Amino acid sequence: MGAHCPDCAGVRQARPARLVRPRRASGSPRATYAFLGILGVVFAAQWLTGGAVTEWLLYWPPLTAIEPWRMVTTVFVHSTASLFHILFNGFSLYVLGTLVERLVGHGRFVALFLLAGFGGSVAVLWLAPAVAVVGASGAIFGLFGALFVIQRSFGGANVQLLIVLALNLVMGFVVPGISWQAHIGGLITGAAVAGIMVATRRAEQKALQVGLVTALGAGLVALTALRFLF
Image (cartoon, rainbow, N blue to C red; front, side, top):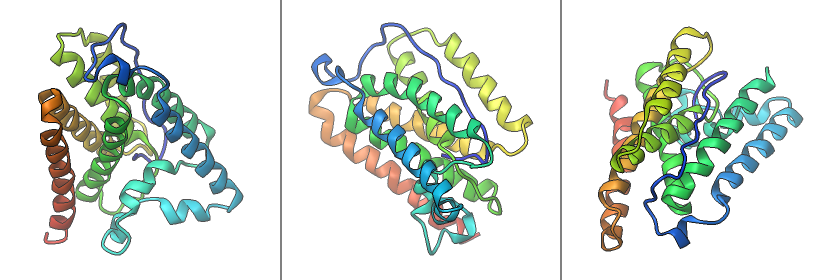
């Protein structure tokens, strides 16, 4: 989700450990490709409608109470001022998404991506409540966080990943027009979702995993509602 401009890059990891059985984790990362397709279609629609689609789907915190779905739909909207925004996010999603989806499986990947995007919006609501944001970077940072947690759980080396992640986080603070709030929120949420998946990866723990991920989503909703009390 969330930046008003350019965002992050990805990193590949050789021969990663998996959270799902090989027969379920193998094959085309179709959810990643589906998300990429949605990004492309929405971006074309933004151009064809003269920005009307952008206005319908972007996230602006003051609209949260009456149009809460924007906290997720903004993930699929990008700045039309520069192709760099969607191209960079699209490339990052392709690199990270194809890797993470093969680690966790299709359904878990969809939940991870959308929850991370939502978490990015929650952070914007709390930390930058007057700023309108667009972009998939919050969700993409969630993939960074998830990959870090998964690889650490299997004893993987994370030096390269940490370097890329640190560089992208710093970019959010020093380059104007980038929502570092969405980056942080997405990163934390993605890491939390992956932590649940790692801790409940046995087949008999599936119901527990679904329950905990659902509870995490409910927690994000609660944080959203809580913001209006302060």
